[in-house]
Image (cartoon, rainbow, N blue to C red; front, top):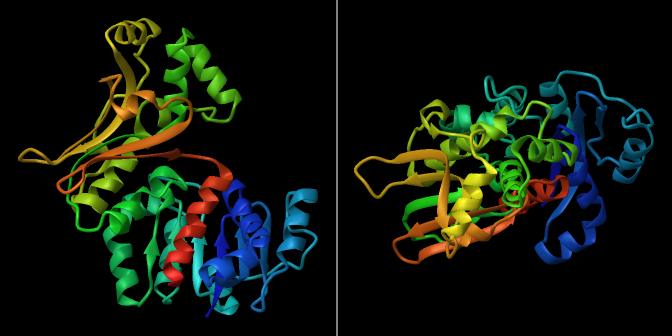
Length: 338
């Protein structure tokens, strides 16, 4: 079967996905039996290109490199829904920017695909956080699949690990470093840098946005906690119900004092089902230096999950990056194709 791929959102992540698909076509066919054509690419800034017989990815990437648009290729006209129909797509990779208030435009894209029996992989946290049950039911009703590995740890496959690699285990507790920006800042502050200087460096390196509120006040981590509550525990925990404290009041002196006591300060996103009620939280915590999360520095992410059958298992890997997140979309598509 040849997978016909539509891509919505061709920013850094979408472009990285096209690069991987272009570079590794033979390897993906030989190793995984994954054969494909990219039939539609839609991007608000770069434009829209479509060919039901398969786009020339080399030409598309060359146009992006030279003009930052698809102006060197014939443009396609029509609404996203019309283009999806005409392209013959069998899977949608949805990589538009996250909007946590409305989920748009990703939510509309995903609904359009699933309602037509087109499977979806997304790295967009908004639709998954806001409409998980609706989209799951929509996929089921139309014989499609919905995958979302990239919404928590980018290309590091925590969700797949829990669903497949640790099938049969029951999660009791999850604690993780799931925001690379704040972990980078805390690492720098542990080296003596003041909060403002650490934030400025994070912004200069592209870790933090011009408005860093979503990261430093814990909102990004809280969204991921909300999503994991649903995936791992079947619990509805709206983002605004997650106990949330960011890093804005953490000081280098506090980090240094913790270090003297054999501890490290980390922004921990957690879910604890060991008590009568599931506790969902994001907070700076002092954790023992012996804990696997204590040694996680820079922009790296890590999650420790406590289970009944295996005890503690820690997964460490990149939590951001254009190619890393593109890998999340690719991994989902390969798994869904099987």
